[in-house]
Length: 130
Image (cartoon, rainbow, N blue to C red; front, top):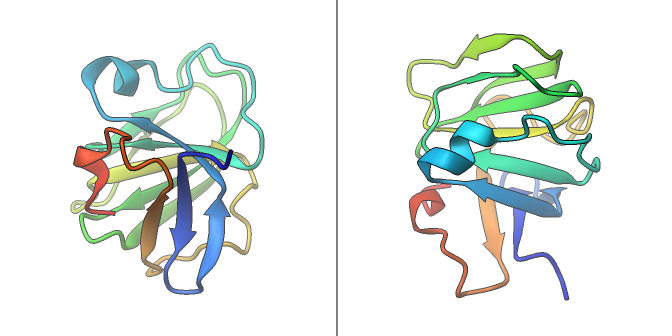
């Protein structure tokens, strides 16, 4: 069975992340990837709503995309080490986190992202804007 949610680059028509986990409530956003083992390179975490992140208690470096409500990539932070904080651009609405260097060549500032939802019963209401 294919993953429930994939992250696509609508600008290039390429799959950025074949497996996307959602963090859309207080607790899933709060915990994020803290204390976890490194995620596979094809997996990501979409945090909605979110305008800033921290990497406290993380065990691995990550790449971060700040995205506005229309799904446009506003900023990319690569290879962000544990114990850092990053505030996104003013219009940031969501953040995509992946393992460090997983986004090289797949996405650029200005690209528009889309979600491909294969499981129509998935609770994705807050992330539909992407």
